Length: 194
Image 1 (cartoon, one colour):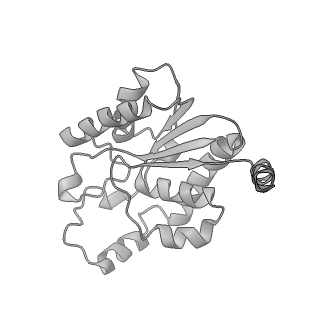
Image 2: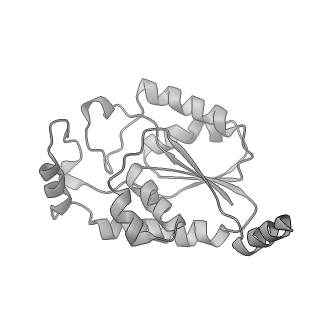
């Protein structure tokens, strides 16, 4: 399987550094251009299936591609961003690290473990079940779910989760992973050595 993980394009809240979470925020003018550019890129690839978060920023990101191509398209709310409840609209422009830590510890914010469970359920039911098939799949989601999917692909959930939540994924970023059958790959490598 070739798996393309894509973070949604830029939203109208980007410049204010507002927390979006489950708020349904549309793409900005820049984001709409990113979506068109993304569609051009994906049209060069023989994509078999697309999954997207149900929030409009993800749907608008993949819309130019799926509307111009006959493709299996699935919408899954499990791919939503972490739910920040009362913090969804707050600007983090002037926040310090302590402010971020306090927000994540707030009882109204979706616990990281719940987010991981939700994304892991998607991974187990959708990705893992097709991992060794010869197909090309695209997942359009948000930064936190994307980082969790990367950790699951590397089969290092806890080790990578601690590190991954320290990184940043830019809008409209495309990350490609190719999963191969290790035994067949190893046999090919061994034969090529002879």
